[in-house]
Length: 493
Ligand code: GLU
Image (cartoon, rainbow, N blue to C red; front, side, top):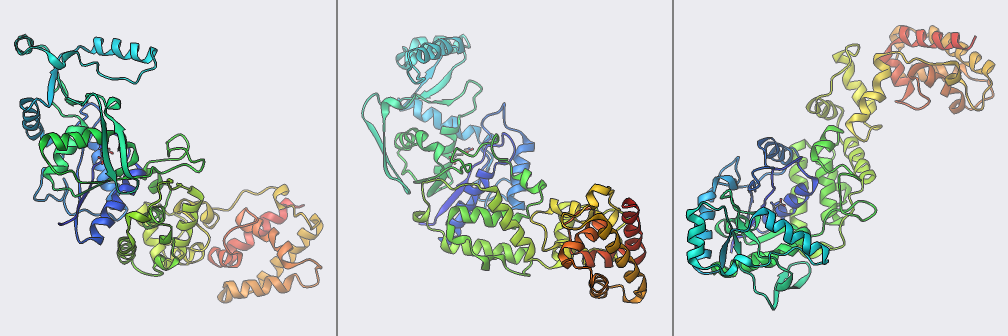
């Protein structure tokens, strides 16, 4: 048997981080087993599906470094891979269910269904179709149809007994048929619902393993029943635990951003996010060797996917629900950025669309990247951290105050620093010489260098912590560095 897996997103909003997580597992499981992974677009909800959403899903999964062997963009022998292009196939299958007596036409109006729902809610019963059209006489059905009364097609569901199916992570799952609604399979607009299209496509596309989120467990009895009605062998089912917020609630927009686009805009490199998702699948993927120091993005991506795939084992997935912990993602992103070369950071910034301030010349960029590399966790940190190199900070007298040094001594220190730097020959204006000169200038001041140098940090960068000061001054040049010391000195008079 050739393993075939799929991810089947509905294009109804921003590309969800959960889709990437499910896609990654399906990709790795197929890869480990020498199988095929496909992407199918489930756009049967015509009112909510949009082309923009579909494009954003494909683009963000590609951005993450995921690929698929078959899909709407790459084609394949089982196409079309977009459900809106497969309507005739679903209609044909609905006809078969009707002919075999496994489904029925339902002419109930929206108002009647609503009344029924209200009554059920009031009686604290789950919403359920009451079966009124289940046994309509065929003459009545014909009359309704000739009069053009709109209808849907519903599946028949046993009224008693229990559905048992096996889940790869949980073993046998039993759900009483009483709890299963007579699901609409074909809507009055002639479009199938998710349930019908999903089962028909998984069968026709020879999917062997349905690996999807656990929110679909309650739908699986309907699917298992449809496989039985059609006389098909059902695939293996594996319901993945949902990603959780740190408080263990289901990952939701209200508590954590859920769109892949958000993480991209916030400057998380794609590989860092992919690596993080890998650690959610299996904690053993949290391995520094996977940072692939210096490797190109492509090599790194292959390294990650190869590793995840080689270790992909459904039995290692805990049903507890992995926590989508943003501080952890941030820290992994920082580690990943630190494992890059300065040139790779420049490339990353470029791809991300970073616009350099005009005051920074092309020649200075790689030096800046070199010193910033170790101090940022996401690309959005880069601009604020390096802004002082393009524009002098606006500082106040209060900001120049140091906790352990009286103002008169701060002034004296700035004076000494200025005098020492003036002595430095412009040709020797480099971080080592600047550092030496400054350290010597503070000799005999009775303060630890660490305490007094904070005044220089504020004068030059506007903040007591920033990029390495001497490198920053080297990049700024002698004239600009001295000018900033002067401005700072003036604040203290
Ligand atoms: N279209 C469904 C979704 O958006 C697919 C569920 C499944 O994989 O069966 O998640």
